[in-house]
Length: 269
Image (cartoon, rainbow, N blue to C red):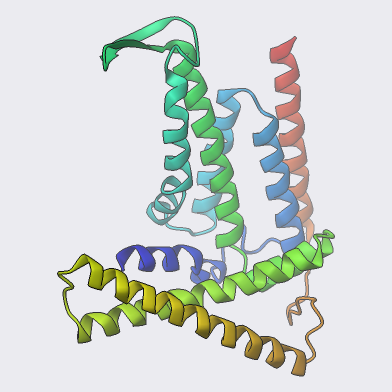
């Protein structure tokens, strides 16, 4: 259950979106464009030092946006970056990355070597994923979900995609609450389950019940949305207002993206 609580706190941390920080004060349209340009810079970059520079920029933006650095690091280092690290582990070996050996060891009678080129490739892959996740986390943490969905429609993101994201945001929170309550109910009535078979039966029954409840709920929610005039477009009371700082921030992002491409071309030449 602690994992569910951690997931809920990670996804639904709207308190940071309400702070008066640097990114919170930016127009959502400009903020989406800035993060998109920085993500493109990460995608096209093949220089580890430029990626480290972008990651340091993420940390500074988090601090200027009044996001706790400990909170931000826990939310960006766990799950996807660590998963990518384990994916990149085989790239350390000379089987996949031939080169200068750094360390050798025996595994089941087979001699394997960790190469310098493999270490460089694995570190580069990990830093790229970490920076991308950090940028995405900055956008989500500093933007309320309805404003983000509205901005995505302005950038011509397909309506079905935006509607699906909005529904998933609400349903994930609801299902986490249902799982927590179900777990608490089972624990208070059954206690500790000693039999594996009995435990499997309890899980299967609750999965079937959750499926039935979700099927009934989605029909009721859709009918309620239609009765209130929903037509597939996200509606928000707040209007977008840009100022001079938004244009300055967007210009800085464009210059940083251009500098990354120029740096890349100079390294290749």
